[in-house]
Length: 349
Image 1 (tube, rainbow, N blue to C red):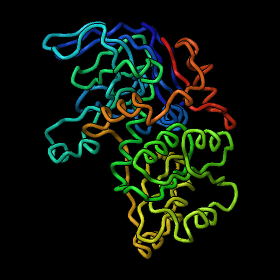
Image 2: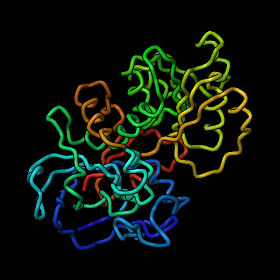
Image 3: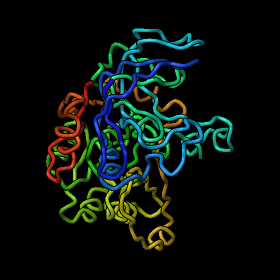
Image 4: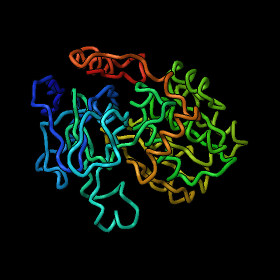
């Protein structure tokens, strides 16, 4: 089969490799769609950051070179021994996070910070290929209300669900989402579904217009005086919660500074730079800063339910579909452009 493989910094290659066969407890999935995430671009240009390197992952035994792609969906084609709950023909989304289930953190329900965590496309072969083999207990069946194309955005929707759950949001809170890319727009919708008032912040008018069309109550262009605009929209108090999803050096600093006294900042972005922060902005105003990175128990099921019910709309975020053989030229290179006019590009094997 063909697969897009990560070998190292600025080195991804479309290669012919053997198609995988399922072992006990595993299913073989014919991939239908895989989204290109900003993390994939960052790994390609600045990594390896999250791609397993320097030694094998303790759960999968794998390290680079690896097949990229952690936002994927497909149809079950076969199963290994011991698989009962998933059948050939099932449409599924891959729950891309594997954890050990036995460590201090897993035993306390904090699987998202398991030290042995493995992620499809980063520490195991991912979905930029024709087939993937994955544990049957880590796939999510799809209802008819979620199409194959929409299912490719289930994984980033779980990131949004996780951010909501980590934030402590209450109905009536005001939430500013900094960065109206794909994850930011999903996060804004997830917070809107809780009854919060949502403000989308970005520098791209296209993103702000999309945020408004997807239900954001207000938008703020960060190229202007965003701090003052946020104060004006909150009676001079500031947002109760600010969620940072942009992942550039200045935005986590802005997110903390824009959070009201005693409020909560949730950091979701993955950073390729190292910001410098005046921690007195946290201590002096008793702000809480929370990291939010990966799915926990129930997050993916909630994401599928929210997409299926229309509470989170993802179709507007699908900008293009590209065949696997053109993934680098028409996918990765296009995502790299500073003035890119896309949210998610889906790769179709």
